[in-house]
Image 1 (tube, rainbow, N blue to C red):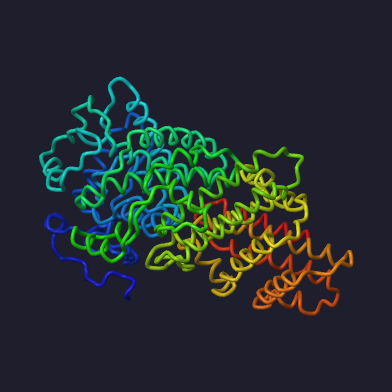
Image 2 (spheres, rainbow, N blue to C red):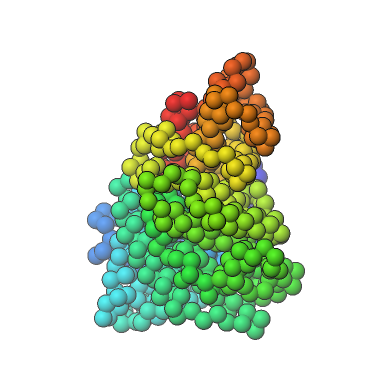
Length: 584
């Protein structure tokens, strides 16, 4: 019963109850958010606030899709809970202790609801809300860039009325003030809300139905323009002399810009497109602060968190440059900062690859470049290990960012040695294309650097095996980021290709190096912990046995994608890995 609300329903009339209640309708769980008291849970929505949101959204009926129906209060609360319980912690932009849904931009409200509906597996409702959010976003962008921009929510976009002001507006039976004023200026806060809505809509378009992918790429280009505007007008204040409220605004602005950068970088990883925001454009920004600072609920708790988890401002350029100088003394970055830094490394590798012609072999990065980036990855790993919140547990108190960063770290190691990005063609949504990319990829070089990448991939496989492959398949939807789906795809393909390389070496009668023998033993022992061990244990021919280990490794990865999926691309990845295993 602890999963359900313990209070019995009130016997009071609804109107009397709603006037004194600050809670939303009961939901199926009482999920908690780190550092957030029960009374501040963002899905606790009063009837008054719900009616205000509905009134604001309905005022855009001229631009909303025909037949759009705003969700009921129960449904909206469920979707908002789905968003914060499943998506938000992977890209923590919203400052939950001061967040009020009713004061957010309407396109952001609908985008949050659309993502949340996905996390409640209500696909048709998510699509319904997605197209409504897109319509409001396009309307906002048109008015923002026009001669007479319309304030989409309030008199001055980005201002935050108090709840009593909002309620008095509604109780007065008058239209919200933003409906009476079409000539309000834009503001930084309003633009940040629009950018956040764009990020969510890009996510929905990127990882789901192929028909939405064109929308996602178009919105990504518009988002990049807004990011550049924010960077050009940003001046980093001295956080030591800021109040808590001032710090929230400046930190929230940085986080929004960094999340946009990281998400656009992830587009590059998934679809082999050029990153829309470059590392050098982000260099002057201070890296995000620790999550303990961001989650503080008051001025006092924020100050205590700053005293406990001391964090000095470090620009992205300073932090990234220090990775290239292992002898320099480095200040520890936050878990969010480490996540940003590994994105920088991946972008660096991407452009190093682009300097080659397609006829070059997949593992032919110049030795000097390869050695330098290998050293950078070692430095990043040391920094990650020194960060307080670092964990391999996506449910750790410090949040899943450090866990997600490890997936990108492994991806970076893989892409030093093989680049499957151009040939996977995930945009086609065709499992056969993934299998052909694996089949056509060349065998790997045999080097110490490749061995380190293999070790990272083996460790990645050991995590779901240790937890339980079946368990991960059924639960990763709500705890693992899409980042891990992309990284696990390449980990599976890379390990399979390395095992093919080892089998080819033995087939030629050549001996294995000591490190290769150890790695082969590690991978075989991981497979032996699973139900697929019987396919391997009784094979006498060594070459054939290694081929079976390769098939088992890829099939294990494929099996982790067998559960229910929030995003449709995960099913595609699982099907593609299954086809790769069938080929071995």
